[in-house]
Image 1 (cartoon, rainbow, N blue to C red):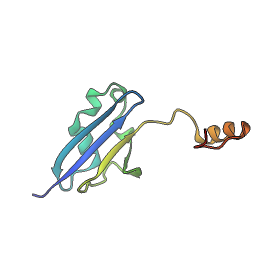
Image 2: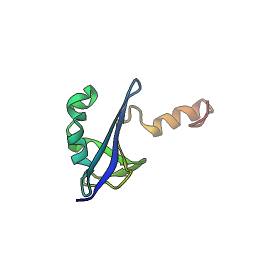
Image 3: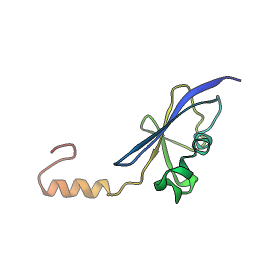
Image 4: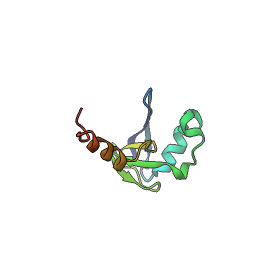
Length: 101
């Protein structure tokens, strides 16, 4: 059986978690999350349903059944705390744009 090296990452403002793993080719994103123990050990994920998590690989959204490939960095995204459209609207009212200080 062929294996691939992958990473799972999750971050909050104060801390980040990285789980490096060597898994069988054909392992899904969801299977990696289950094997990592993140749901049980990271407080901000404990109340989340696995199926509700938003996932990505190198900033590209993927489904839970995405099959991991060599070198993939699977990311668990936090829910947005502010609506991006509302943030842009508020910045425009102040004469600013996103990415500008």
